[in-house]
Image 1 (tube, helix red, strand yellow):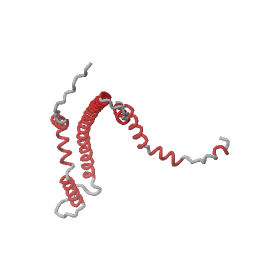
Image 2 (cartoon, helix red, strand yellow):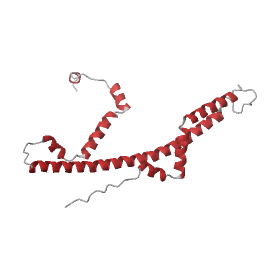
Image 3 (spheres, rainbow, N blue to C red):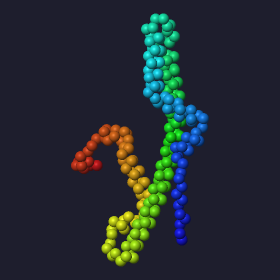
Image 4 (cartoon, rainbow, N blue to C red):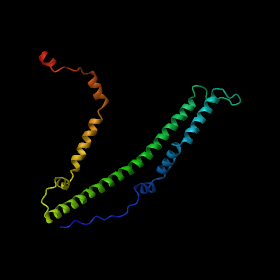
Length: 190
């Protein structure tokens, strides 16, 4: 039985689709994140805070102080700015993360289809070799014809990541646990 041919359509960019489907709040968050992530915004904040501190430290004599040291109003304003900016950044990152996840999934699916197609081509090559009477065994070709076990690869990668992400607690346990020499446990009768 013949498998249906996989269509090869030209897909619209996942990023373009994601950007076009954004809600008003997400568009606002993306715009605000872009604005606040600029060097101009950094410069504006630096100048604003400097002027605020100079005014409220009575260093500018003709402007009366309205938020004396320890600058409680400034502290509140900066805290509110940080809260709202972090929320808007998280909204933008969530959208971006969703798009990235979709892109990764599409790449995975395309790679799996490609692997199946390449394996089929290699099987055809092996059959052609056989029909041409080539008896010499090609071990490399035989290994390539074997389908890739994606689950085994996934488990191996997860295992490598788990070993690499050894926690701080594990490091602490190793540091505080006394190291015994091999003969020490038998000498104590353990």
